[in-house]
Length: 260
Length: 163
Figure 1 (cartoon, rainbow over the protein chains, first blue to last red):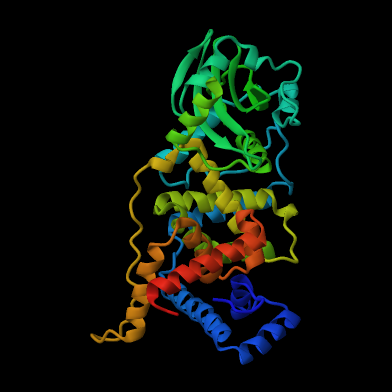
Figure 2 (tube, chains in turn purple, yellow; figure 1 turned 90 degrees about the horizontal axis):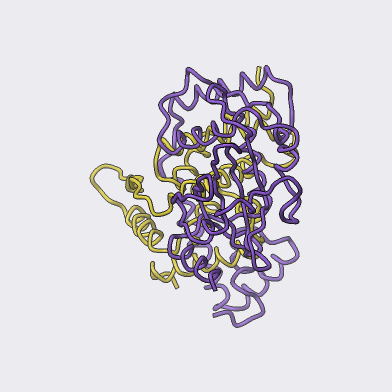
């Protein structure tokens, strides 16, 4: 137990060398005069040493030849392209991916590429300006939530499920909470005359508000998907502090709480 | 010819791969995470302050990429292969030393800690990130890092009989 004014975090920081000189001096003086304090500090030192040794003994993770080759190809290609910051929403700048050198990719990443292909092609000017939206809900021109059946589907379907919504189909990708605790859902909507969209909606003030949407006005199955489009979505999700996917139980609980 | 950023990036690959493995426990997914991290790092390199260390910046990108993947594909309930960590045995010949036994006990005790404690311990004690860098990587306050780490180490000490 700490008989003095120093909490565990301070004693640990002292043992780890993370205190500034003045604070460390105060702890050192107290340590010299107080056996119980000294024992507590010794516990932190000892666990620190043990964990450090454990870390040193852990196997290294050497980089397999395939990965090294992919990285080299990416670096070489980037050197050839003009330097830039994050790709602009809706632009057709593509981060160069090595193509033929890539080893077979696991199912997870293949699915990523497949959904990217849905957003290929005509991500035009108007849609691009909606791609990163200020957090003020639906804007002009994007009547997504007005489409028949979508609100119902959002309140009913679990992540991974698909369901009809009016003339089209909703596929829920995931539910999550933002860092402010808002309940949000990412979903795709596919309708015959309006192309495919991927959207993030959040439930607030009694209803769903569209926070983010990327729409392609038509499928182009010959095109190469701009990686920038999903990067745009990821950038938005990072910005709102989107947490990990909710478990099926928590998602179901939140959906039924909305129903009332 | 590489510039300093590229050199440091390549030098960080084994550490990134090790961190990725601790997150997803599968070599193929870890490799993809590392590759995605490299691509994002290159695109965002103008936002990196060269006065700071590159590793924590890369770790943050990688961890966020992992969270994006788990969110998009709802893999949380998925069965994954256990990454087989060989025993942390520094065995000299047939004699198992006391220090080796202690490390094995530490490894075993560590595995029983809460995931959030294990994650913080991995970053601070294995990857040797500072408290502030760990806070950056996880996107949480430094104070939270310190209190989680302290609680994790106290729990570990109790399990190992260190008073």
